[in-house]
Picture 1: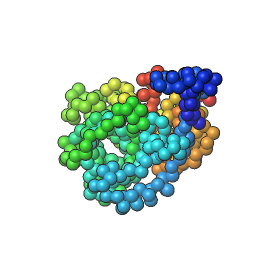
Picture 2: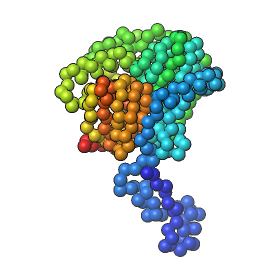
Picture 3: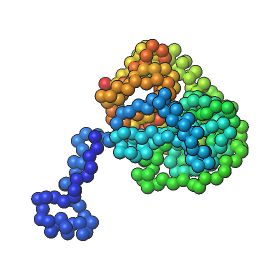
Picture 4: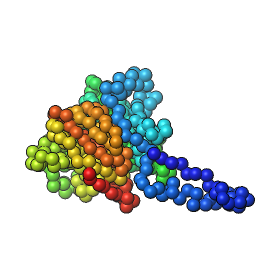
Length: 347
């Protein structure tokens, strides 16, 4: 639970003294100290699950009701019930589901927040990042780094939906949130992205790239590649040993974005993971399978397409049903680490 900062006046002090402090824009720390620095980590965000089978009809209805020219980005925001209507899924992360229809083009812009896209359903759409065309297929991860021009288009025959993850609440807290004016999307400069020809094997990077040098050499991770790597990793791991892959910048080994990390976990049939809590908040997208997760004291059932959130410092445990399951997550771990606030516990 969150707590508000109490009134700055100390009732034990003379009223005239408190009034003098207020005239000077001063406040006594001792009236708010234990709210500003509580004995336990606290967050207003709560564990919550959004059902794909409930959201999908609403997304398709939005696509019918709201022209792309009006919306620019046709998105339903996943608003955490504990955050009082804020456009946020945790205090630092934003998540939404975006839909684009065949033949549509979302205009180009850039902005200070970092963004990533995890494709949920449909084929035929693409995202262009600084002119690099990134096909969008279910399970693919695409990043749009801060201040890089990007747009979306659709050359296929069915609606395409993806999960947007951004650090908007964090950037807004620093009063650094800004976006350019929209401009019409231009034809991509390339017909592919580096994952198709330059980053196709682990441990190998091109000596020279044919793609624009933006500081972010890898912007798309195809699900077919990631899933095959998960299967190979799972085959070589002992029962009960977690099967997790992190998405990284292949040139540095670091996080793909300055403030957000991403990873994917393979759950064997019937597997239960060890309980763990981290100082980073996480948003999960179910790519495959069924199961349930305990977040804090809350059990959340899930199936393919569902989204759920684990606020910071909540113990998390996953249980797969009778078939393999794959859970994608994005988180604010890079930002937490940069601030020297990273911690994690098991059990």
